[in-house]
Image (cartoon, rainbow, N blue to C red; front, side, top):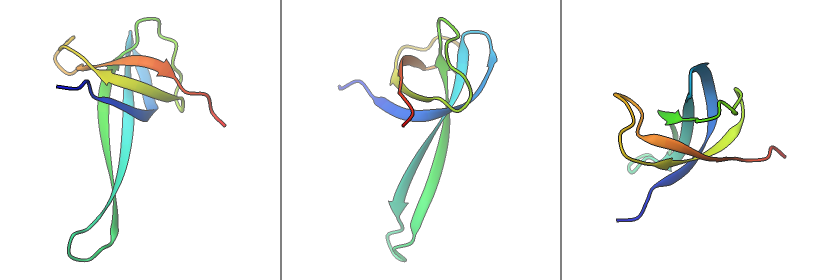
Length: 80
């Protein structure tokens, strides 16, 4: 099974070695064809506490690290 990776925006970094990443997806409604925006929040492991709020980051699914953490930080994306 392939490893899941996704890109999102850091919305919280108040916990030690943990960040909250908001991942936004857009899809069309089947019947009405309206574009629906859905946001999921994932807790991710940030070993060096290097991320700040607003950073674009790439996260990867991993083994459970704690009760809520199942993702780890891969790298920070450069803002353009």
